[in-house]
Length: 263
Image (cartoon, rainbow, N blue to C red; front, side, top):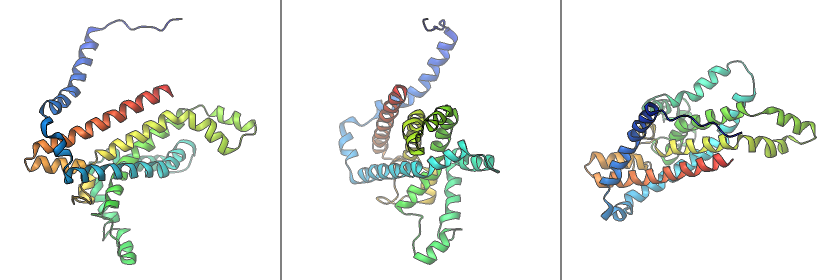
């Protein structure tokens, strides 16, 4: 049997083309206005390199935290029935729809020097989380981890659990079932959730600047550096940094999409 082919619909094709152009034109503007002659000089400046390096480190740390803590949470929401489950899911995914600045204020009230947890932590150890590099990671994790949790939970819910039951009935241990059955089945969702969390962390702005500030070399990530460059009239620097983020993010998204389809 051959696969069915949809008849060409000019209305749908036209609307699809408009939708595609809506995304293509802004990126085209970046490419055409990019300072190609001085791109290397702009990107290799100490301020740009510091911002890009901090963005890389913070986003990878955020992704690692999402894997370590988000995986058990997604598993709990997908596989365990308990009272208040809807509330837990709602609170977990709330940062996805909250304005990032609100998230930053909430983080300050919780982990700031006078926050619910930050005050006793500061009194006991003298350590204050805001306006530090770990503070950047916390801010990014707050807004990025929900994307991982919701994606992985969907994958866990949609998988065929009878395959796990069959493997256990044949004597496979829990670890073997997870490694040989569960993990391959949820791999596309796991990969997609990981990339979504990473990309959200790379682009995070509001919660970061509110909770961690904008200290060059300490808390100034690439999005913050782009904002400062644009605000101070350094348009070439803002465009150059923007292009770097676009190229890296696009390469990761395309590569992940291809691997997910093969899986």
